[in-house]
Length: 432
Image 1: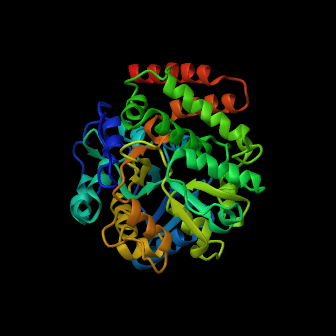
Image 2: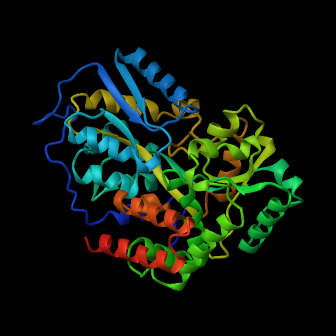
Image 3: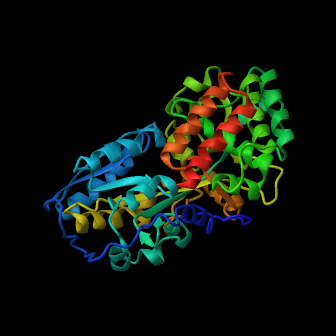
């Protein structure tokens, strides 16, 4: 995993490598009907669990309804939006351990999806890959991000890339003529924005994962690609100058008012739209923001732009992750749910749901409908990725990191102490 770069076609290998050695073995006796002990009775009533928010849940439900009408099924779509990895996996895990759970669920790859594969709560989908030809219709590198110990426990439908999405009017108001090409220029832009009475970067600290995007970017800047990857894998000590420097810069962003006041208490579901509303100049988001924030607000995409956050490193990387669906190993409706999943993975369904970073061939963003997503793909699709931190770490370690970042920003912990604490957290995990 170390010493390599990851392109859109290859970055998900990092997530795949990160879960190697989990001891997951292929389910034996797998069949398309999915029999076996503990399997629930078959029915025409299906349940899908997701974390879609109000801006996207409607298009998903519309496609699910279309499938139901064609297949005589009734699918309930439940969602737990906003909390990200802070609550959703725990809610899902509680349902599954209770003996129920949804027939199908949306989940991230890497260390967030891995536990469901390891516990064999997620079905081995190899038979359905073969039946529906997903190996040839879906980006193969993305499939690797939902494959654990050789088991295809999930099907990816999106490969996300994070960068800065900004409000052109606010940058112009602050006298910013061009997007920053270096980290120093990014700080200079922030200073100009503050001087003009504009909060630069809109990130919310509630649940931890949104504001985390800033720290992982700063760590990429101070540590560089090779060391960053080793830190995430527990192969190098976090108690080192590069990490202390990243935490120092992280605190600086708050102290210099480059983040919203009271950022730690802000809900990402609210603050993530602020750059569109003109409350902040930019946000660290992925291609989904064109749908969920810009188009949902009926704004013109021409009034906004995006750029890759400058790291001053070579290769220049940005944060990335994969999302997909898993099917409940105990569901009695595996065949019907797999058919639903295949329906959602059709290019026309992906386009109808306005997926701006689809893994499905033929579902690339239409420049006429999603010009910013198409622009991002043109500029940065070939850029390498580092795995987003709350997917590189298991849930427990991510939560522990969130506690560290909270203590740091509140002044209860120094950058050096934060680096030392992170070493304790990651080394304990790496030994397991």
